[in-house]
Image 1 (cartoon, rainbow, N blue to C red):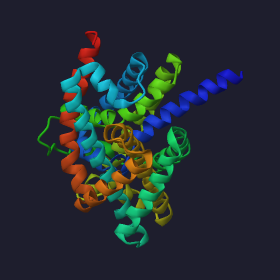
Image 2 (image 1 turned 90 degrees about the horizontal axis):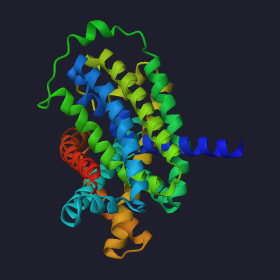
Image 3 (image 1 turned 180 degrees about the vertical axis):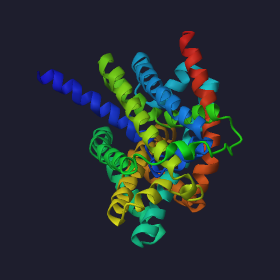
Image 4 (image 1 turned 180 degrees about the horizontal axis):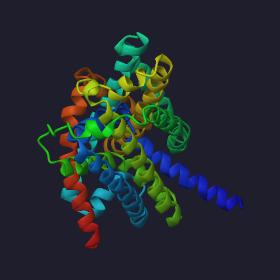
Length: 348
C-alpha cells in the first residue's frame, strides 16, 4: 500500500512539474493562447485540442528518451541524438531560448507588480528574481516541491475563472472571428507545443533520468499533458467568448477575471505570478546546468551570471516578447524536435 501511494505521488509530481514548466506568464495570462489559437476562431479551438494531444505525446516521448539514454543533463540528449555538430548548434539555441524565456517571466512580473499593486516595475522584477534564486539553491527537490504546491493553486484559479463564465454565448461569437496571423492555424498550434516542450526539456530530461519506473514516467507525462489540454480548452473557450474585450490587451485572462470583481482579479494576479516563478525556476535551472560545466563556474556563480544577462532583457516588455519572440521560437523548436524524433526512431 505504501509503495502504491509513493508511486501515485511520484506520478503527480512528474505531471505537475511538466505543467509548471509550460504554464508561464504567457500561458496563464492568456497572451500565448490568444496569439497562437484564439484569433483563429473555430479552427483555433480545433488547434487547442490538437495541441493538448501533442503535449501528451511530447511529454511521454521525451521523458522516456531521457530514461533510455540514461543521461543526467538535458544538453546530453542533443549530442546523443543529433551528433556533435548539430548537437552543439541546438545546445546554443537552447541557451538563447531559456534566457529569453526567463526575461519574459521577469518582465511579466514587473508589469503585474506595477499595474496591480502600484509597486515599481524594477522592484517587482527583483522580488521575483529573489524568489527564483532561493528556489534554485534548494536543488531539484526544491523545484519539484514548489511545483507540487504552486501549480495546483494556479490550476484551480484558472479553472474557477473559466467556470465563472461558462455558458457565455460562444456559438454566436466564434463564427465572427477571422484569422489575422501569417501562419496557418494548424502550424501555429504545432509551433506552440514545440517551443513549450523544447523549453521544458531541461526538467523532462532531469526527471526522466532520475525516475526508474517506466510506468510512472508514462502516466506522469500523460497526466501532465491531459491537464494542459483541459486548461487550454477552458481558457480558449472563455477568451473566444470575450474576444472583442481582450483583442488588444497584454494579459487577457486578467481582464476577464476583473469582470468578476476585485477579489478574483487579485487572486488570479497572484496565481499568474506563481506561474512566472515556476517557469523562471525551470529555465534558470536549465541555464545553470549548462553554463556551470561549460564555463567551469560554481552553482552560485552560474546563478549570478543568469541575473546579469536577463535583467537588461526585461526592458523590452512582456507583450512584445511574447508576440514576436515566441513564434520564432516555435518555428525553430518544431524543426529541432522533428529531427530528434526521426533520428531516435532510426536508431541514433
